[in-house]
Length: 417
Image 1: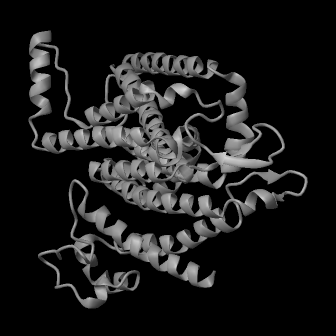
Image 2: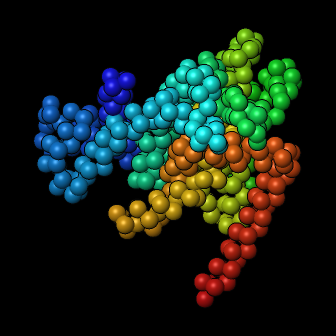
Image 3: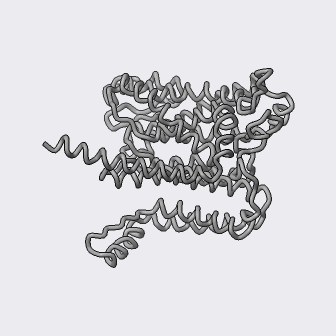
């Protein structure tokens, strides 16, 4: 165990170094801070010591006049933080059974349940480690520029889909029976807490999976509907916009390869399709919730209420952790936002905080408090409400839109004079 934890600390340091490289070079306005990137023109050549993780940032303090006082502290803390977090996450998820149900009488994990969690626990940890690195890079780019690059979320989403098609064990455990004294667990796949409907193994399931994939690819395209010159011109401009950037060819290639890959996995059937379909549903729900809020809030307020990077980020998160955890993460994100806003304001005096870090923090809270929020609260209530939950969510979205619309006109009336 000590050797495992030491290796994980080393991988955390390396992962932090990779995250720092992404943060400073994959952003919209790259900054010559990372030691593995080209040095600034006004700076001195990079030294070997500069590229040693953690320690190298002390050497790079000499560039404070170029990048600002204390610029080296944040990347140093990212590498150090991941070196600590990965071993702790491993111990929490694979050794202590932190994701598993607790025997309320003994106030501890049930031994019989814990003993069968070794293999899925390691699979979950691997998936969460990759997701954590992606979220760290996305979070700090979002802090710096209020944007999240597709170069992070697109490969991350595809990797999650591939991982899920290899093993559906990457999804966190649900204690069974739901709402009762736990005796065993199952992976939280797409059908929880209901029974599997055979139609998802038929052409209906395949068409649903292909539709989700097509919708995701279409959402990534440059699409704008401009109606001021009529519907005919709007459609013409719409399709012209789709092919205006050279990246449309890459996107079409991704779509075709995905269509073929999903069809192959469906033909293989079994647990491979089970995992892939669960990941696709997570992608659809995670991204769909944020997209719906973005559309409604933007229409009601008359301005863009949320960046599309938040949509692709939550789609990626949903593909990793499933639709149930994505919904929980979304509802926990405002609680995380309180702490984030306070810390950022103390450090930078900047009151505005992008939404992406909230979503990532909500995801972390979902993992840490998984048993309480999922097994003891979310699933029992979801099972009780049934299909009514869908109509409740639609009503809440409508109410949110109406409130924002009224608030928009109140502000206009108050501040127009």
